[in-house]
Length: 167
Image (cartoon, rainbow, N blue to C red):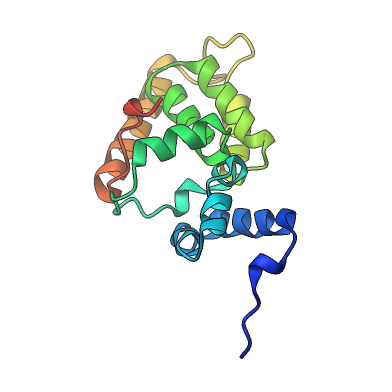
């Protein structure tokens, strides 16, 4: 079977291919980076970092500079990074306004998990930002505790990074 030389495509199309590869598979992106210098430079483009899906990242691999990756994704407005940070801020750190804002930004970028979480959280959250409608403060504290336990267990079971270190 003949191979198609990707470098014969226009640069805009090459960039789109690299972005789609980055969104679908982190391992494939690094294989693509290893093919040639042109692909390596395309893989370092800002749009590529904005298209990563961090839920597909193999957290068990610590060889790559993880904090650098997370900071760069956050700086580029990566939806999955904004979502993770938003959930952590809202449910774990009690930074409600900042957390909702980050979840909304991720939802506006059409990140499905963020859309659901933002819709449910904003439906429960009162407009004045003081409390959940129909829930006592104790119940909201229990929700926050459960989310905190989930985040702790998720980090422990997957080797997911410590979020406090990459902002």
